[in-house]
Length: 66
Image (cartoon, rainbow, N blue to C red):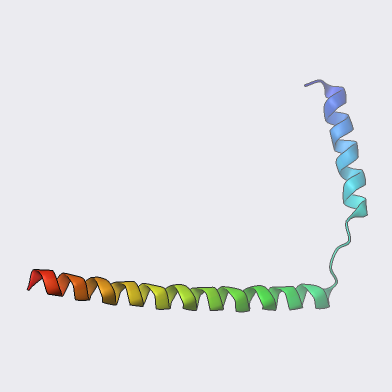
């Protein structure tokens, strides 16, 4: 890769970054809240699934171990 290629890549990157629309504080806060709520919901679903699978496995193990 030549130095000219690196220079062109850098220039193109700077130009593209100028086109980016950055969120304002309100949008950032709302998006963060939505992500946190989603993470809590998915965590709760995984926790319930874990409890369910653990219960079924304990039941199966108790049937065959006893």
